[in-house]
Image (tube, rainbow over all chains, first blue to last red; front, top):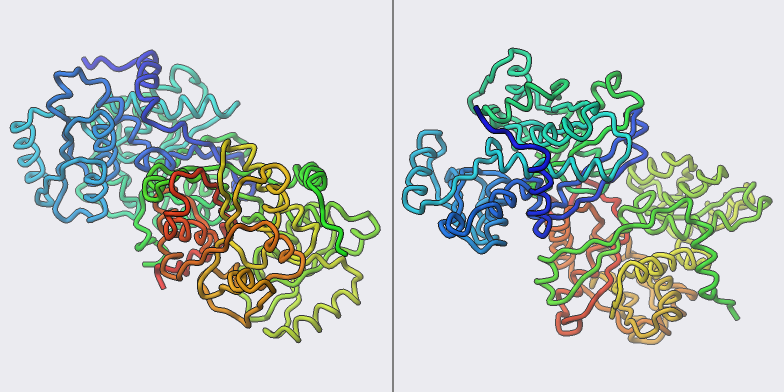
Amino acid sequence: MTDFPTYDDVIAAHERIAPYIHRTPVLTSSYINSLAGAELFFKCENFQKAGAFKARGASNAVFGLTDEQAAKGVATHSSGNHGTCLSYAAGRRGIPCTVVMPRTAPQAKKDAVRGYGGRVVECEPSTSSREAVFAEVVAETGAEFVHPYNDLRVITGQATCSRELMEQVEGLTSVVAPIGGGGMVSGTCLTLSTIAPKVKIYAAEPEQADDAYRSFKAGYIIADDAPETVADGLKVPLKENTWHYVQNHVTDILTASEEEIVEAMKLIWKRMKIVMEPSSAVPLATILKNKEIFAGQRIGVIITGGNVDLDKLPWNV
Amino acid sequence: MTDFPTYDDVIAAHERIAPYIHRTPVLTSSYINSLAGAELFFKCENFQKAGAFKARGASNAVFGLTDEQAAKGVATHSSGNHGTCLSYAAGRRGIPCTVVMPRTAPQAKKDAVRGYGGRVVECEPSTSSREAVFAEVVAETGAEFVHPYNDLRVITGQATCSRELMEQVEGLTSVVAPIGGGGMVSGTCLTLSTIAPKVKIYAAEPEQADDAYRSFKAGYIIADDAPETVADGLKVPLKENTWHYVQNHVTDILTASEEEIVEAMKLIWKRMKIVMEPSSAVPLATILKNKEIFAGQRIGVIITGGNVDLDKLPWNV
């Protein structure tokens, strides 16, 4: 049986990573509150190091390694923020980092990994190629595998985000976070189930990649093959460790259409003057769509990241 | 002779407007610091009420009126942030506000004035029409004219921005602010000349609208007729009161090309994850262009506003 982390592990993680992450601000918008009929507190992980909350989990994994482990470096497969953030954390510790990415991944993502000193190894855009190439990398380097979300060290690192949020805002009644593989949601469950068990946890997902929603309703993990959504951080499926948290601690999973996501994203950019990713807009989209659930509440909303291609904004394509 | 405000007036203004404005945050970027070879402290007035520093000056003018004056309302001509911010301030006091705007002004700017309860009166896009229509509005309403930048109440309000900046950051050696009509620069001069006279004040201007630069070099006000620049907040000329401050307290005026401005804007969006206007990018553009002036300094950079048309970003047109 898996030995899941405790809240003491979250506190230890927070001390471990504190020198390498920002305590990100919580922003509010009276205009958006009036639209929602509730008080929203946006935890702005778009301002996080390397532009995403994943710097927390990656730093916890990297700085928790023994010197012997660290000498061989870390490796992962990710075409998104986890690869960039793992490269960032490895760079801070001064150890090698290899990220396996499909050769079709955006150039900007490859550049971001390299910008922090990591090495990109390209594979074909298929699961079988990724697994084969990744196995080679590990065999060759002996690097420690840090999974983007199913890794318990990563989940424990992400859990520090809602710990800060609870210190920054009093009297929250709900927290809403986007769900892809479930790393942020699992971290939120880990923290809140101990320090604020009455606070409801909602996961927000694109309708077009609603595998977590269907898993939650079915009672077992359902994984989709390559769903398409503007919220490109949320395409991956749950895995056993994140499923554990979702199944046990999430109140409900809510979904939003592509149009609702883009509209919520633009609303946040326009009114709050912050740059954030489409994935980060899914919580607000679901809140505005389900006003009856949230009316009058004090809601924490996780803005997960800010790494967006400014040349391809979703309302300009 | 004009009776210019003192720093005591700035302190009084700050108390007067405190309930209606944000104490905006100061952000930094280690990446941009490494590019500049200096430490930059960005004072983020893009997060200000109504999206621009002009909420400070407008609030000071509006809340400084006697009840008799206030009953007749306020009026201005502006197709930019001042109109929106005056409407915001008037709305907070619950008094009428009329903004004269060219009928060709962007719909979003008209909507913004109306969104805060103000009235838009359209004129033809010419100085003569604007003056004639504005005179009618004042004759009809008896409203108090609040000029966008030459009004000393407005300058005194803007001066509260650098007062906060000096409280928020220790050891600044320079402050760089964009210059259009000169309201923000004048406010900065008013504050710094009293509380930090050794801090150098640089004004940053688009090459394509460099009338303040040429005025500064010539020693008298030069006004251009309808210059064209992406930094659309900086097209207006100096007037006698702002010229007084620029002439006496500004160390130098630096200019940047359209391309440099857009590049600096994109750099800030990408690295700092904030939405700000092209005008607000001119200071960074001039700092990166004049590294020899700023090397090793601690520089305050005023991000003046965040009201940008997300459908027409300058790198997408």
